Length: 298
Ligand code: MEV
Image (cartoon, rainbow, N blue to C red; front, side, top):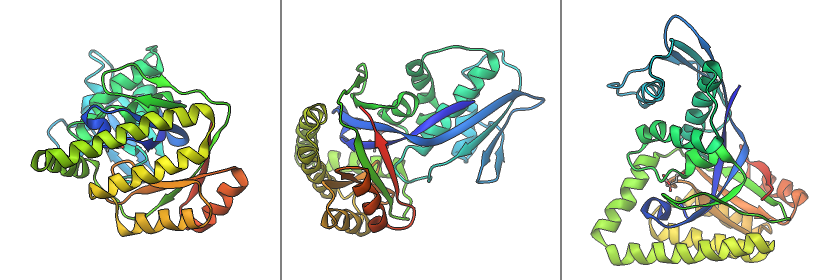
């Protein structure tokens, strides 16, 4: 059975596309997949009731991504791959990367190919590139590897260690967004106003460096403040919707240590940091329909 996790970027999204570091966690929810040798290539996606074939020229990104994945296996037999997606799509939790990782993991298993989770992450980048032209690689890496880690483009992944688990509550705004469009929007802002956007990235980098220390020291009060500050900088890049702002405000008002949007923004998810599991469950009630709790050990 192949598996790709969802991920939550704690700090550093968007800046990570432009070479800054980011910190992310892999979560237990994700995508499972199974592949069998068959008469023709098919990808079935539940619960969406979608069946498609590989097509490198298609307008449907999933067909192009499936073609890109299969191209990694020259001389292979035809494959029938079934995936079960347990993540909202377009919500900033790395759904597309998790599908890619699960599909490749399942194909590896069907063909008896062995590779490390980091090698699997690298292979899944060709899937991720279909969805947005310039992925930093953080989504596919965290999807394959999990844990809590500091990621920087073209550098080795740095797992973070702490003996205090992170209690996160993830809330869904109900608005879906396109990572490709949001990354392009930040790219345009950088081109038109390089000073402002470079300063924003520098600010985010400082927050990420301090958050690494806070996580390692188990100082979740400091971490919460850094999350709030990161949310404000992302707002200045026009990535937060009113709904995401309202949810973060509600979580802070209800006692969260900090709250921020996560992923590409423009909709999708936010998360709040809670002191402990009971608190996380209480905040889940505040964040309404679709909110869920995760506990991540570093
Ligand atoms: C999307 O989950 C995170 C972004 O930073 C894009 C990327 O890193 O590829 C917005």
